[in-house]
Image: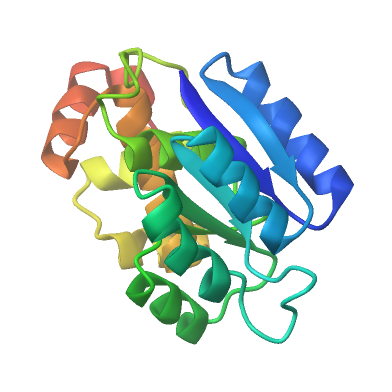
Length: 201
């Protein structure tokens, strides 16, 4: 079971993410915060596997929430993976966040399967006893991505073919890997070729 704290200044967003994650049966939401200070306090108190953190929150609106959260959690909850979510992310934002040593960066319009896969990947196999159920059902879009992977497409080529951003494709690839129970592209292709229904046109 993955333990998570959700930090977002919109109550409806927090409630929606909470309901989604709990419904998977793989995630326990141990706290919700509506501002940066509460996010730090709850995370230090609960010591969760992951913190889902909105990039821009009240009380520190002139700078990203990671500027405050990351340094404090390095001391107060160093094993917690910080997953940043935002409605809009520029390439510069993503580069800055990666330098801040956050575990992952996601757009808020990410597919539910990608969010769960990201959490699995961030917290590691030691927390997730069963990373994935081989043969797990892929969404239509995940099948599209896997089909192109099996044809040897690179992520940028998949993005062009499916009219998606490069970042979105990477999230889909992570979700596919998680569902297939693999860690590498070559393994995914082998699994796909063994189960032709996933990649049949």
